[in-house]
Image 1 (cartoon, rainbow, N blue to C red):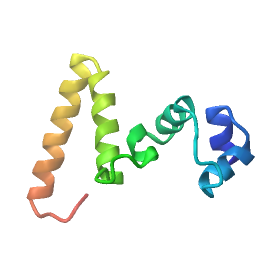
Image 2: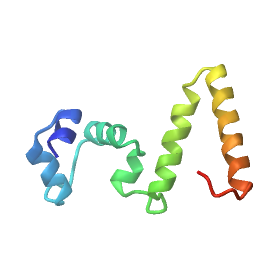
Image 3: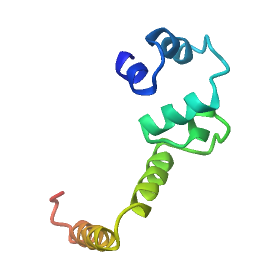
Length: 95
């Protein structure tokens, strides 16, 4: 809890209260910092979109990070993904 508190600039007690649902109205700024820290969308933390799973949140964060890459970095990542997909389909059991 202390690491999270330090990362977002609040007290450990505040993080504890949020976790235990003792504080039910965190600021939008704090939600944004927590979402960034945990690499999830704000909606996931706010509970406003019950359909967002952890996997969906991770995919959304990945896409945000992907958009910030250079064209060359995107090309390399696309090639890596294609290679991983091809290896997965080969049934060789390696990962």
